[in-house]
Image (tube, rainbow over all chains, first blue to last red):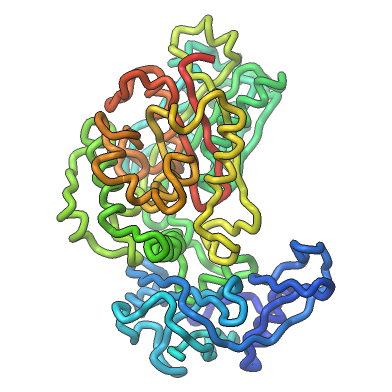
Length: 146
Length: 377
């Protein structure tokens, strides 16, 4: 599959992660859990590192978390990203299980852009909630202040 | 370690990567006084583009009975040397060459710029949101490190300024002509906040090689040998290379795993290390490595850099005494290996007096490797 927008996107047919991306397409932020022992893991993978089961289920989450860290990339970048730079990238720790983390962007609103928030106002520990933005055929989870 | 060789460093060198590799290996063999036909072991990086067969056909090597490649980019450097040494110790070969050749100065050769397909691996959990380059991934860990332990940009400047001072004494260092002050550091452009341009390594064309043999054979050679006193690789539980945000303790990197084995197999500890070459693709890797390799406690690496601690000749741990990846050259950290050997030989341009124990580390933030060189077996 080729890149049309110039953004780097997942291959939705890759079986290990397909459940996650199917969830975001429905507006759900899911975390992979072991079908045998129930341990949560992110990113998804074929085997549970706790009990070695290959059984998998997808657990719903609150879609809420706190900012664990953030960066502000500047060029040189790939052209699609350079056009938006400087923008923010954040890592979010999930509210109910802070050891589960997601990379994302902080937006001013669900329809906002990744370069709208003044980076000087971003704080580690800020509460955020998930929103979804469509890029080509991918529903990308991003975040707004809670 | 009985031979070292390196080409010129530069941007846009006319020679091919293969030619550079062969020149560096040839120089290392001449330095050791060993004939190419005596070489029977080869080691390099999985990211090395020159194949063993091409190197062997050009340099005129003999029967090769051991060859290996070590993975994870800059984490491989000491791994190539250590695996070659193990092969000698177990009788798989008698004379081994380890090398790295790379033309990385042209911006079109940046690995992150080679994106042309949908993401199927771990990159799908970071790149879609614009975390594209290694500097972005390390910047994310750096911000968290600053938050947890009170590190500041002044600490990162301590690192960059120390290495630039060392480069000024090294005639082949790419940045030796360009002094850096705290003020000039603070005025440099951002690359990925909180990291600015001089927090990043250089982009370099060049090649380096080393020659190893048994301690017994080394005694008959003309060079002063550096002995591989201890060697270790390191890959911690749940580690995910530079996007290491997903495990329980992202700031406890591969250095901790490598250091445990490195010192367990050694007769010396961190307090005995007189000089260090710490992998410096990015300045924050230095405080993380100082912690991992036991020179200070957890979270104390940034403060360790104060008061010129990394600077030759008076710092408590002169570090990256050739200028390192940030100010000498960035050849995937292999120049650090050669500088670690020069310190044992007594031939560094920032020579530490009585440098009988010399530490070299490879990429922190990726599965890594490290060596303790000593002047006696």
